[in-house]
Amino acid sequence: MKINGKILLRGPGLHSGQECELIIEPCEAPEILMRSGDNELPLKNFSCNGTNRGSDYFFPDGASVRTCEHVLSALNGLGIAGGVRLTVNGPEMPALDGCSKKLCDEILNHSDKNFELQQDNAIEISEPLIVSSQDRKRFAAAFPCDRLHITYTVEYDFIGAQVFDYEHSPKNYYENLSGARTFAMLSDIEYLRAHGMALGGSLDNAIVVGPEIQAAGGLRWQNEFVRHKILDLIGDLASLGRPLKAHLIALRAGHELHLKLAQKIKELNLEI
Image (cartoon, rainbow, N blue to C red):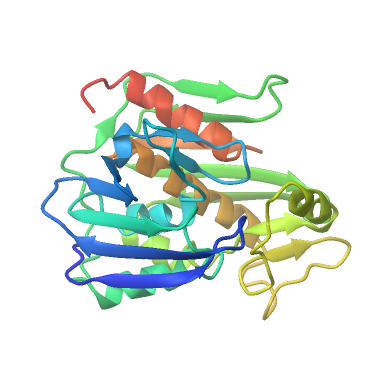
């Protein structure tokens, strides 16, 4: 899929609550470029951090763009790996609808709408790779495969355990993942806001999980939570700069482990 027009999106950032602007437009570069202020880099050249409730991308001078995962998930999920420049004005990406559906719709309105999966320059791995938390209760692993296949398991209070097995294609992504919204535990919200996070969160862009689940319009799928985690993972894989062929298995993972796994894949594919 190729973007053939300029997309302009504005709205509060999920964590900062500040008004943020995102411009997506075609460019001649063979990869995705991201610009903020005077800085610009291909996605693969950023250093990334996933410890602050989102995926933050850092330029060499320390400047950053926060919460990139949903925007990059839309691009990566629809098979856009190059020929695009992202210009971000503000401290983070706009939260939009808390998933990637709105951006996917904008991309489809400004593209050739070609859902064919392009994997000519996809990264392939030749051996299993795994990253885990210190207590080894959470992990993300990659195994050799001829396509992108993701098996993800989550487990939360009030939600329980959810497992979703996903076979990647742009059409499958759009229909079965793009509408899955981010979520937060009701018990965490006071802490997050006291530490400068979730200031732009609302039921317009998130699900609140507690004894009662609060979601505008109700849940879109009963397993919307694990679907959103796969949406996040696909966004974090955009840091590779190229499509990936692998079977990914994740258990109670998150942005930190997603990005560590992507970094490990990059280290074994130094030509990326």
